[in-house]
Image (tube, rainbow, N blue to C red; front, side, top):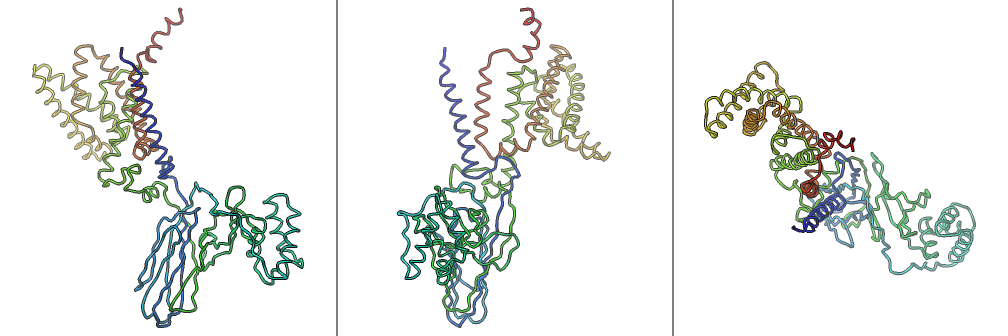
Length: 499
């Protein structure tokens, strides 16, 4: 007897590959599990204004580099200017260049950003910071202030809270320090005194519909293995999801040569975008693991949207025949009828199927009396089916029943073969068997249609090709089943009661 170990190994490999593919497409590429999911995007516009002095212009605007946000799209509006966007690991900036500019100039940069869900927060420093030594008497005042705050705290969080609160008091030390330094600058200095990694950044508070906004000074502090953003002025900690960090580790927001009276302001707009479309737009088309049907022409995409539903119908047929024990006419006929239902809708499809099969069986009964050869008889049945569909369609159109026009979507050859098989079955085993197998085929086709027409299943079948490997594994496993069907157990239940 052949060992079954290779078979089970094959099934496990199929399930593993299907699961890995599904996980990769959802987590790495971002294809949503639920269709219709929306993601939040922020459209940020930077407006640069300056006065040209008849000299060549070279303007460099620093662009945001925030690990919590991902750039979706960007463009610039600057007529007659040469524009280049430089983006590497160390910097991100847009450059405008033009010769002999005179008068008021306005340049625009617009970028669309989305929130990143899985952010890896790693410290970007090698050694713990050391606070700079200030000039006297500021150094003595800073030491006195810090020692008092440190003594009233128990850990890093409470120290931050204590320093934030004491920065708003009117103590002698803080009054002296604030006469020389800003609150945010002092907060960073005290964090360094506590050997807590902290750096001064500038961010844009994201609020829908805001105009003429300026960057807000913020502090990023690394505590509890995570970077936190703190607004020292408002004492808000950790609201990083609503702040786009625009400027950090950079000398200036705007570096302008050949102009004067420069000014940068920001406008913000909030919008929603379909998550599936966003993942398709941002996927790497050269990556073989990121391959999807969306890289094909739209016509081929629509073809595969139908083809990839056939395994769903096959799974239903195998389950109902092998495990449930439902009799039906053939294996492919219920699947193709279910596929036709997706084009006609369920009610019109059922009426069309019953009409074609009923009329076809009557005409096939007459053809059997002519003792025709098999090929001639089947060809004649095909022509009869075409005639029935054509006449039904014309009559429906003349009567204004537009829903009945979808009967033309039925597979004519399959319908002819179904009529031929049912007619032979009628002659050999009687009309009751025809009703059992015909009814079973319709039940299987209806269940398969309900599965194939489900929005969630259609989404998975087209966007997660690994699901088909799992379906194949399930079909192979059911193909090994040799036990009783559910209907057989129901049929023999009186025997079970006796024992």
